[in-house]
Length: 85
Length: 348
Image 1 (tube, chains in turn cyan, red):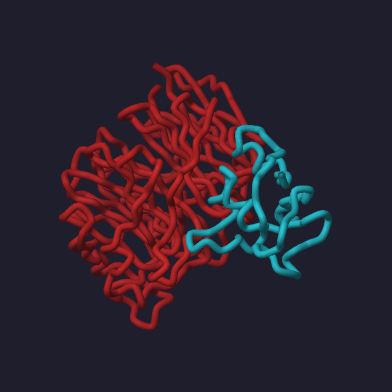
Image 2 (cartoon, chains in turn yellow, cyan; image 1 turned 30 degrees about the vertical axis):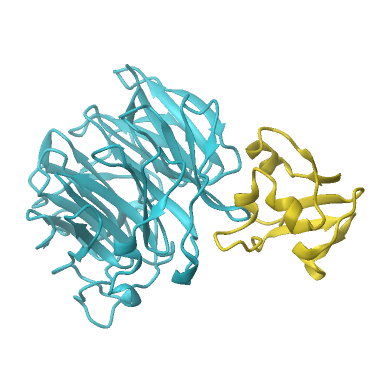
């Protein structure tokens, strides 16, 4: 099972749960299972521009992003862009 | 019964409660911490609290709570159809309908309807596909559908900067109602659409009477928006502002909080002042008893509310003020909140 870790703001929207174990072979498959999926993806199914995803510590926006393959040991970490005031 | 003010801020939602004297207020919050709350209401039909919430990371949505903010659920379906080529940028205003329906205004100039208490939202096609849409332009706050009034079988909406529209068939079609409303920033001063309405309200007891604070003046209509009369001057220090409130007991009364100009979004004369008309806009007088005499404040379009008991507004500098109708003393109900985006009033 891959593990998905949510930041605090998203965990609050998921009933306080920060860590999810999911059966998934890609990042996209993992993220779409989450109860907060409609906060990660817009209405046409695109990952929101300021949602960053790291797999085992590597930013996958520079790579295959949603098609990034996962293994049973993968750790997917969602990180919102740092900005605002 | 108590008066409850849902106060939307840039950093979450606060609730202010008072008994009928409206002099002592209890503050609760922040609820939905971290979410900018553009607007929040308590639906008088069932007591459900709705918040139009917008995250710059996680997008635009609507939260709802059946226990006044202890537990929250989020809209499951809310967005624009792919073939429109548009995406939902923000949710701006939630308004109960006359039946069981809810209306939601958003950016880019869109309207949604929910028939399941805010779980799912269907876009209004009549507005999405309006034949004048190509002539609409976003203002500084985006192309927001910020005013929704449902009265006497008619729906009124206003969009910055598309103007005001009226529907008499439940939202299937929309008629522009912008005659004689100025658009000084537009190549054509009085276009059919494109006016920058900042807030539009219908009087609850006299539904053919509409008021609007516009980018270019204050207006009243006595015929459901077919014709508008410009009302600034006559005691108003500026034609510019965002906030507008009415008195449910007197259709000739309206309140505005002017700002210097479109270039200077703060109150004129270095003070915070609410201007009241009691004669349908023919004259205006300053009501500032209790308000700070040295202030450069700003009140946003959703930041002014009214009920039978009084008036309530919140500033971008984080103060909520309350006063009875008719020019009584203003009391600071809360201060030092995050920048206030909206204030509403409810009985709970």
